[in-house]
Structure formats: structure tokens, C-alpha cells
Amino acid sequence: MLAYARALTIPARYVTGWLGDIDWPDQGPGDFCAWTELYLGGRWYPFDARYNAPRIGRIVMARGRDAADVPFLTTFGASTLSHFAVTCEEVTLPAASASAARQGASAGPLAHPPPPVPGG
Image (cartoon, rainbow, N blue to C red):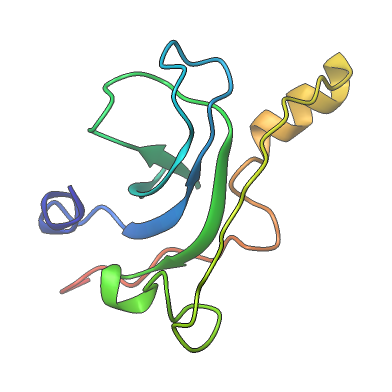
């Protein structure tokens, strides 16, 4: 998806993180995963072709141009991982806070402007 988006001059980035089990019919544990974010209409939107369904509970660990930018085992230092646990809990926000969170979901401190468009 990254390559297709970039070929169409749509800014795209690779994201690694944890896919929690909130509001999902599969009762198995969450899993480490990667997905794509596309910059459309002034904000970043997540796209994950793997499930073909909206998801909540994504925990972003790193963002970059591709998988080489955000390797899981070396993102936080040497690859000596012996245990990794993530807990996901759904938090209910008041209506005004929830609306603000949805509008600025991808515009927080971890967000960055879109990468330059090739040839543009």
C-alpha cells in the first residue's frame, strides 16, 4: 500500500505498534503489527488491508518511511528482548473530549508533516 500511495503522490508512512483486542470479535490476544498511514485532507489516516474492517485500540510504537526506519527489536536499543507485554483498556471519554480526540487523533505530538512528494 505504501508503494501504491506514493506512486499516486499520496504521502504515506509505515507504522509499527500493537493491535489490541478492544471491540474485536477475535478473542485471541492482541498482536504486534504494522500498518500504513496516508495523509489525506490535512491529516493522517490509518489503513490496514489485513482486516478490511475499522479497528480501535491501536498502540503506535514508531512511524517511519518503511520497515527499515522502525525495526521492532532495535527501535528501543539493542535486541535483547526477553519479555514484552501490552495491556489495552477502552476508555470512555465525555462527548466533547471524544469529538476533539477524533478530530485530532493523528495530529498529536507524535504526528509530523507529510513527506515531500516525489517530483513535486
